[in-house]
Each structure stands twice: as structure tokens, then as C-alpha cells.
View (cartoon, rainbow, N blue to C red):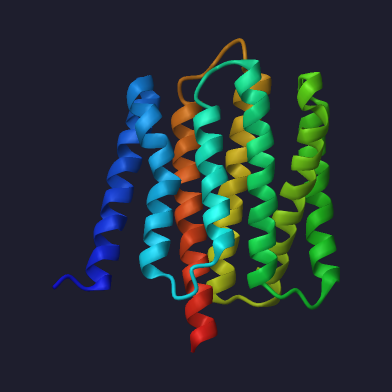
Length: 226
């Protein structure tokens, strides 16, 4: 009989094989393959989490479900799909922050504030320097605010306590912020001179960020169970 570890290992292999297919499909590009491989990324992480998690927190499934929806909406190059993609992305980030605050107990808010403020300046500078559509204006502002908070909590917790859990969170968040930067450049800076390198780069960051976040959640559960 196949044990749980073997099933988890098998799905990890499937996850990264699908990830490689997705990155190659983005490079070509090949839309039919992208429409299959891209939503499979969060779906496979949900399957992995279902088999490997002891708590099976509903919030994790909500985070990944909205990631799946966002991935689908970011495939077409249209302002309408981008608008709805930003809405889904924002809801996804809200659930992501809620899950992180559930796991990470912040006791000292001074390091958190000191880490959040510089990130806020960076993202709002990018926002001010880009041509954001009016229908996405307030959503992008709110999204930048959440990105600064996300970075602030990861950096401050790592600085205060260099544990495996906080290291995984920091790596994941840095990848998420790198992904947001690439999306900004692709959607708002190089909209007329689209770079063929940006989509594969964005998906590589997306793949690594979400897998590292999955490892962070699993690592946190194991720490609570010890």
C-alpha cells in the first residue's frame, strides 16, 4: 500500500513537471497549454496540502482558489480581464494576509512598522510612475498597501527570530514581491513593447513563491504539533 509520504513526493514531482511545462508554454507562447498548466499550479498545491496537512485550514484552500482564478484571468491580454484579475488578485492577497497573521504571532509592532514603511514608498512610487487604468486605480492602491504589509511582516519576523518557519516566509514573500514587480512592468510599463521574457519570469517566481509558501504553512503546522 502506498503511504502518505510517497503520495506527497509524487505530487511534488508532478507539480514541478507541470511548472516546467507552464514556463516553456509561456516562452513559446502556447495558449492552449497555458490554459491547462497555469491553473494546475495552485490546484496541485491544494492536493499536496490536503494530503500533507494535519489541520487542513480552509483559508489555505481559499488562497489557492483565488490564485487559480487570478491565473486564468491574467492569461488574456485585455483590459477587462486585467481588471477582474486585479480584483481576484486583491481578494487572494487579503486571504493570504489573514492566513499569515493566523500563523505568525506578531508581538512587537515597531520592527513591523519600520519594515513596512520603506516598502510602501517603493510600491507607491512605482504606482505613481505608471499608467494605471482608471477602473483599477483604487484596487492597485489597496493592493500596494497589502504588499507593503506582507513584506513588513515577513522581514520583521525574520529579523526578530531567524527560524526555519520565518526563513520560508521571508523567501516566499520576497518571491511574491518580485512577482508583483514583474507584473507591474509587464502590464503598465511595457504594455506596448511586450517582452517575451517577462511572462516566463513571472510564472517562475509564481511557482517558487507558492511552493515555498506551502512549505511555510506545513512547517508551521509541524512546529505547532511538536
